[in-house]
Amino acid sequence: MTDQNSSLSHLDLETPEKPFLDANELVINMGPQHPATHGVLRVILRLDGEKVLGLECVIGYLHRGVEKIGEHRTYTMFNPYVDRMDYVAAVSNGLGYCETVEKLLNVEAPPRAQHVRVILTELNRIASHQLWLGTHALDIGAITPLFYTFRDREEILKIYEKYCGARLTTHAFRIGGLQYETYAGFEKDVKNFLDFFGPKIDEYEELLTTNRIWVERTKNVGNISAQDCIALGVTGPVLRASGVKWDLRKAQPYANYKNFDFDIPIGQNGDTYDRYLVRMGEMRQSVRIVQQAINALPEGPIMAKVPKVMKPAVGEVYHSIEAPKGELGYFIVSDGSTQPYRVRVRPPSFVNLQALDVMCRGQLVADVIAVIGTLDIVLGEVDR
Amino acid sequence: MVEKLRRSYGSGIEALTYAGQNYMVVDRSLIPEILRVLCHQEQFDYCVDITAVHYPKREKQFDVLWILYSYARNERIRVTAQIRDGESIPSSVPIWTGANWLEREVYDMFGIKFDGHPDMKRILLPDGWKGHPLRKDYGILQQDNEWVQINLGIESGQ
Image (cartoon, rainbow over all chains, first blue to last red; front, side):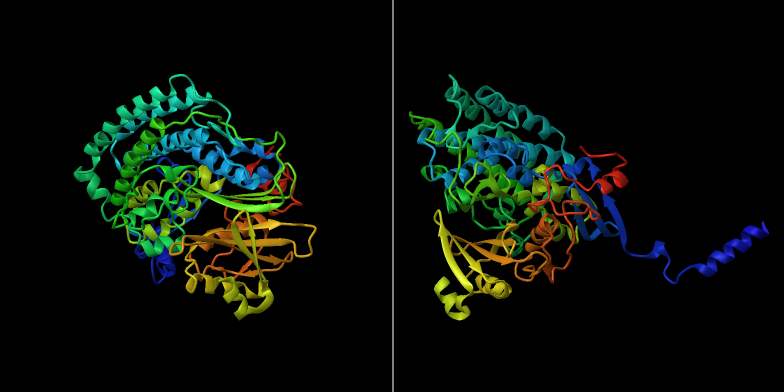
């Protein structure tokens, strides 16, 4: 008894002026194995109670050295690798890569190929946004949307499977056009999907847009101003929700987007709710684009004249497309051989993730989950 | 625009075009200044990407590139600076906040240091890793065996 007492008094003497439990700041680790970080993202949070003072992202757990692999493969062989970066939008990755190499080779895909490319890419945008909506809502606590979106996303994956045999990492496009002609009944399948899917967007909105819990959890959460977005290089729906009407499909049209009529949905407040509305709007616009493309699908060849062994002239080219997550760019340096000298991928998720710190400051811990969801990151693309 | 820049900065700027894309090769000594002018006076307010290319046979082994975009002009431009192995280059984080992670990635992959960067450390590879994988002298199967053995407890990652 006396021993214990003496040891206690000894402890008292050693107590620092500011005991740990009274300290305001707390450092907490979230992830990398966490269901709401959408992969293997580790976030080190600095907290004052429930309030976030700042955070640091630790990434790289999924690094596979895609850019290095690119230097050791021919232009054709590297094509399937790009599908594995943003694996929920593999078709968009392929489009960006094929168009960049086409620029280097100075060829252009024929009109029919361009149309099919737009159809498949826009369907992919819908699929990517569906997956985002389902998982984002699940993170916040709404379980039903996940079942709705996955049910409907299945229809898009079925079209991919019928077209090229794969559902996720599709490798749908080739440099110079397409390898496969569309299957018999492709047009009917796509039209059926559009008729089926149009009303489904309203169904999702009915579940969430005026849902009080959803509005409470998303309005004024993770705000970011247009100025901050531009300074940080943030693109895609996140930038548009902050009020910047900028979409590469309009600003610097690629493929044949200039032939189609569509609007750019924008938000005003730059909060999680606006980003939700922008992505819902984008799904509607994608339906519009696919409708126009499928109704005006031209006949003709699907492959431009490209050499079997590709040896682009010495030079360097940067080309980017509007992927579902933002600006996806490829910078390729050719030294005149069959393999690229350097392939650089400018991933939208990587750059957008940098905004997490700005968006989470002053918010609650639970909001960090909402903000990670609303940024719509894919760790396969962040880490490459 | 390039003419105007050349008038104020002399012969350190060379303007080129390939496949309809404009880029300029700028002397290393002009680097923070030219980028600042491009951002604040010429409205290139969006830093799309920063990356590097390794040419081991050249005397100045590395190309460091800035890919810039201007929302107001709807125009892209690339700025390239050539540096020697082991040479550092001024950071552009004071100009574009978003350059932070991009420069860290260049450091991680090529070992190019950016002066004045607020947090110059690796980003994709673990902190203790040896070597910079995107250099041409780094083999595609090469890895830091020592790191793998100590941290993962396995003989080799292959």
